[in-house]
Amino acid sequence: MAESNRGSLTSWIVIGLGVIVAAVGWLFVAGVWGAGLVGFGLAHIVLGIIDLFRPTVKT
Image (cartoon, rainbow, N blue to C red; front, side, top):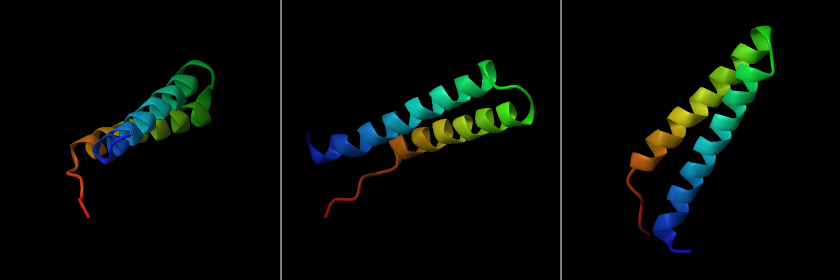
């Protein structure tokens, strides 16, 4: 795998895990714990999207 794609793949994995965690919190967990899981998942989605737009550092 090329170096430039490795960062992008990591971002997509973080976004995907965020979607899964947010969905589990939304659908299966009630109350404060569910809201916490949704927030945690949404934070990962936002951070993964921000990471997609971050420029890569070439060494």
